[in-house]
Image (cartoon, rainbow, N blue to C red; front, side):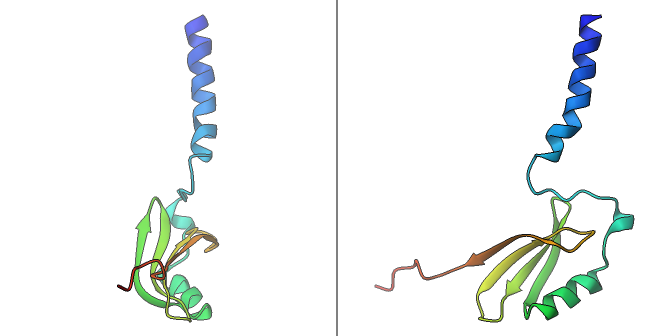
Length: 96
């Protein structure tokens, strides 16, 4: 009986732990926005696209922003909400 309760507790808590496992965006494909919507969002934000890919269930855009900085933007596939944006700055490089 104790083993059954322990296993039941683990099974109940496992999905809750997965929900807090980071910025994974796993949702059914039927709820995803089309790639055309991702492209339209990029145009609205003046991002130039180099590549759109799927990473950890999220859309990921590689490209440049309006200032010409390289960016990597992670989008939730159902809502197209920006979950992370990273800028690749080269200001830290030595110019010796």
